Structure formats: C-alpha cells, structure tokens
Image (cartoon, rainbow, N blue to C red):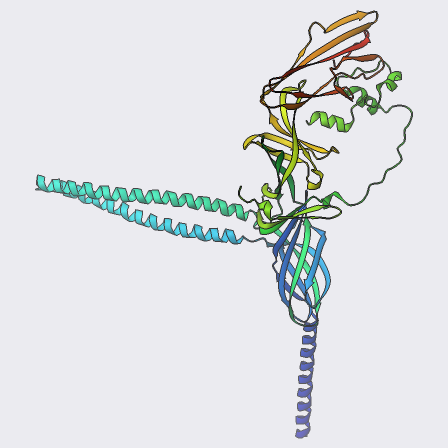
Length: 561
C-alpha cells in the first residue's frame, strides 16, 4: 500500500514537471513570434527645399532579432505629410508596413549645441560663485579693519607718531581692499553678461524642446538577427525658398554677372543642422491634377452685381447714358479682377561654386555640395545657388509722364537656359550699390530687362505745349486739344540709345472720339502706347512732340483726361 502511494506521488510530480516545461516552451515560442519594439533615433542626411515645402531625407541603423520587429523612428516633426512617407532599407528583411503616429509623450530634447552651452554656463556660474565668496571675505576684512581702526584711534595714550603710522596703514590697507572688491565686482559683471548671452543663445536653440514629436513605425520581418539600415523621407509644408539676385554690371564690360541666390526658411520644430541642401523649382504642394474646362454659357440680361461691378468700379471712364449703349464699351470697358489687383499692388570663391544642376521634365534642382544649417525659426537664411556671366546690351529708358528719370537698362540675352525664377534683386554698378530691382521672368521676350538704376547724365523733360492746349465748343460737342514736348539731352561722353515711352487716351465708347495729331515718328504699340528709340551723341539734344484731340458730347462730359 505504501509503495503504491509513493509511485502515485512520483507520477503526479512528473506530470506537473512536464506541464511546467510545456508552459515554458509555449511561452518561449510565443515570445519568439511576438513583435519586438525597438525605438531608435535617426539623422537628417539631405533636404530638398521646394518653393513652399521641403522633402527631408533621414537615415537610421538598428540591430534587429529574428522574427517580427516594430522599428519606431522617434523624434520627428509633427508637421510632416503622412501620405508622403517613403521607407527603403538595406539588409535581408521584408518591410511589412509603415505608419506615422504623433507622440505627445516623447518630447523633442535639447540639442547637443544647447547642452554644450549649458556646460559653459555652469562653468561661468562656478567662477562667479567663487568671486562672490572672495568678495565676501574682502568685505569682512574691510569691516574688521574699520573696527580695529576705531578702537585704536579711541585708545588713551596713543602718540601722534603711532596715530600717523596707524592712519598710513589704514589708508594703504583700505585702498588695497577697495580695489580688490572693485576688481571682483567688474569681473562678476563680465561673467554675468556672458552668462546672460549664453542663456539667450541656449533658449534660442531650445525653442523647439518640449514640443510634441512624431514617430514612424516600420514593421519588419526577418529570418535572422542582423544589422540593418533604414532610409526614409517625407514632405513638410512649413518650409520653402524664394529666389533673389545680385546683379553686377560694369561700364567696361558687355556682360552682367548674375548671382542666383535662395532665401530658405523653415518652421518644422527641428533644426536642419549641418546637412546637405538642395533647392528645386518644383512645387509638390501645387497639386498634380490637370483642371478641366466647363461649358461657358452666355445669357441675356445682366446680373445686378455685374452691373455694379461694370459701372461702379471702373476708374476714369464715363458710364454710358443707358444700358443700350453697353456694346460700345468694348472688351476693356470694365476692370477684371486681375487688372484691379494690378492697379492696387503696384574674387573669393562663392558657395555657388559647389552647386550642381540636374533637370527633369518637371523641375530643376540645384544641389549645393557645402553643408548648411537652417534653424527652425522661420527666418530667412541666404544660400548661394549659382553665378552666371550673361551677355547683354545696355540701353536707357524713360517714361517721363510718370518719372522724368532716365534708367540704364541691361538687356540680357539667352537667359531662358538659366532656370531662373522671378524675384527681387540688388543692383551693383561699377562696384557700387545703386538700388533694388525685380526680375520678372513671366514674359516671352527674347531679352530680360534689368533696371540698373538712374543715370543722372541723361536729362529728360516733359512739358505741356501751352499755346496748343485749348478747349472749344462746337455745337453740342466739345473739342479738347492737348500737346506735350519731350526733350532728351545726353551729357555723357559716349553715344547712348534711349527708349522713351508715352501715351495718348483711348476712347471707351463711340460718343468719344480721339485723334492722334502728332507723334514725332513714334511706334504705336496699341492701346494708346507710343515708343521712341533714339540714338544720341555726346552733348546732343532731341525734341519730340505728342499732340492729340478729344471730341465728346457736351451733355455727357468726360472723365480721365
């Protein structure tokens, strides 16, 4: 009986042990197949900046075990476009899925530069604390000196010689202590200024710390444990660049040096610190879907808002006396939205030496080989793209009706191949800054006109011909004649070519008749615009005349003349 009980107990123990072993085996098996989470950081290796966005490329290395892993790429901006994420890898594994998630618990931490600044601040504060201790000791010594001096002076039986010695000692010692205290105070002020400046700099670097960050979770399956590299990129819209130019011209050269530059800004909460930068003329945010034209219907009658717009917003035009006269207004009888907007809104090496250009069917990209730092502060940082020597001719131009100045213009040829964008520019002539300009690339002209500023040696005047300007009444009509004389004088030592622009009024309906009486050989460019092209020798003066007559009905009057 006892033997049977012993055998039963042994059997039960064996079964229990086997059960525990089975549970452990199942647990280990499930652990082997469970997804392993591996949070890692990455670094920016390249940024391609578009006009209103940027593509940020990052890289990360990580050791993964055999089986399934979730690689969590931490510390990313929350301002990225999750639909634009692309991930590639180097290694024998399978990319299962990619997803983006904001991480409000994992804040962006201080940068390495900020940490170094904090170390400097701590060191300076230690120095300042030591100065304060030394100053306290000196102040105590001074207090003790004053007490001893008072006691010695009040003692009975002190001779005049002893008092003189005591006074001399006090004076010498007091001066020594006061100077030492002054020196400590001055050093303390300098240390405090350094501490304050460093703290401001550190705060500037840390402006993005404690902000929410984002993470990209990459699911990976691998048959073996290995070290892998993940390369990924994404689009951010809180970034961009605008072009601007340095235009350098010389009287002794027939070429203009054009410095093509970019003003880059970004506010992605993460600094682009010492990374390779490219700028591209592309714009992913503009969308890639072609618009479709819908049927354009014309109906009888006028909408009230159209009438108000047509008759109420046009400046310097007389409204017709009745709606039946509408046809006489013509196509430019009213202001379009675009026209209204136009009326309302009037020898060291350069970084560009390390720029390479690549062109695709959709955009041009300028790769800058020198690494750049663009902080996340939404400020503009200047980067050289390229420099060109562009062949050009030089002419003068003037619009004396608006401005009697004569402007020297550089007419750049073969500019279409330079991959430029419209933008502001700084103008330098013969090494001196002469002002600002704007390069308008939205034209189809063979030449690109760049204003180099006013030339004071070319004098232009425009005055009314008083004895010609008259207003006469003939029956129910009024005739008004107007004339101007334009005088151009070249006081330079060289021949010049100058283009003069002026205009005469254009009728808005059949009740107003305009007759051009004199234009002194000007080319009529349509819509009332005239242009003269003159060749002037040194010291030569030429005179031009513009005369016109306007006839209109007395009862309706006229405006805009």
